[in-house]
Amino acid sequence: MTAILALHRHGPDDVPPLVLLHGFPLDATMWDDVVALLPDLPVLTVDAPGFGASPAPGAVAEALGRSADPALETYADAVAASLRDAGIDRAVVAGLSMGGYALLALAERHRGLLMGAGLLDTKAEADDDAARANRAQVAEAAAERGSEAVAPMLTQVLGTTTQAERPGVVDRMRDALAAAPPEGIAWAQRAMAARPDRLAALARLDVPVLVLRGAEDAMSPQAAAGTMAQALTDVEVVVVPHAGHMSAVEEPRAVADALRRLYERSV
Ligand code: MLT
Image (cartoon, rainbow, N blue to C red; front, side, top):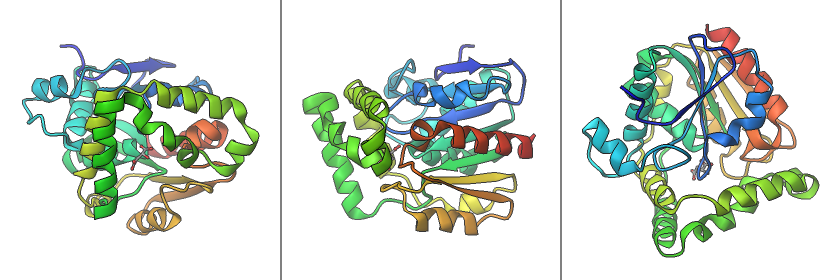
C-alpha cells in the first residue's frame, strides 16, 4: 500500500526516523536547511493534507474512512497510517506550529508511535473566539482570492532580525506564501480552529521532549512554551536568539542542533 501523505526521505534509510511536520501554510521544503545540517540522520519530512505533494484533504479523509470535516485528527491519523505503510511503527516526531498541533493530536491518538517529541514555536492551548473568527475569515478569503489571503503573514511569521538582516529568507518566505494552495489554506485554518486544548495529552507523554521557540516569535508566546514545559518531566527547553515564528527557516543551525539532541536522547 502506498502512503496516504507524501513522505520525503533524507539521509540513511534507517529506523527509527526523525519525522518533521511543517508549519502553515508551507510544505515539507520548509525543513530543507535543517535537513541539510543532519545528513547522518534518517529524516522523513511530511507534507500535510492539501500541501506539497500530498493529496487534497478530502481524499485523505476518504482514504482513512473519516469525515471530510477539517480536523487535525485526520492529519494525525494520516501521519500514523503513512508511517505504518512505510514499515515504521516508532519514530521521533517534531512539528513546528501547525506541525506541533498535529503532533499533539498524534500524542493523544497514537502515543505508542512516539519515541520523542519536538514542539517548535507552537502551543497546546485551543484558540480563543477571536482567533477562530480570524481563521474563518482567512479560510473564506482563500476561497475567493487564493494565496493572497496569507500574504499579510510575512511580517508576522518572521522575526524582527530576519526582517532587517536576512533579505534572502524574507524573499523565500514571500514566495512560499504566494505559492500556498488555497484549498490547503482553507482546510488547515478550519482544522486549527477546531482543535481542542491538548495539554493533558502532552502531560501523558513519557518520552523525551524538546520545547523550542524563536526568541522573536510573535505568534507563539513564551508563556505557552512555559506551560508546555511545566507539564513535562523529561524536557529540554531551547530559546533561539534572533529568530521568529519560523525558527527552522530563520536559524536552521540552532534548530538542527536541538533536533539532533532530541533524537539522541530518544533512540
Ligand atoms: C503556523 O505557523 O503553522 C501557524 O502560524 C499556526 C497558527 O496559525 O496557529
